[in-house]
Image (cartoon, rainbow, N blue to C red; front, side, top):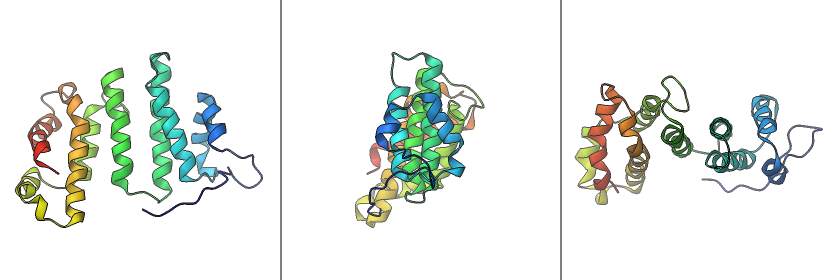
Length: 194
């Protein structure tokens, strides 16, 4: 990953500064508006990371009502999307943060088929699309992972981390769904991966 320099977090030419302090104190509605207008804004990845971090904290806040927590979760996903669009991060890195938010939402707010935030089948599908390998191919190299090049070891580590995130929602995936069967086959690999 590249080294980054701090910026002024400018929204666009002639606009007010929108730094971390302002983000941290902004109400939910203002941040939702910010995300909707982001195509016209120039915010750096650090500002989006601040929005994501704040949103995840508020999503987990038990003092907030359920619907407000869900709105914060959606805001976290939107901030992650904008962070990804910065081009400074590998998709796998951002995906792990996204899966973390989505799994939390499925667990704490309940599964909801067709909802990009709370559909456990879509969450699994996103992980398996990122893995892009068959279980058998990954299984075949688990015994020899210590002799693999560093890049391959890191790839296997990402697979393990993504599968570990999915473990808590397996019982929330309908048993007749192919993703339930697929995840059931993959989970026993976790202890064998680096």
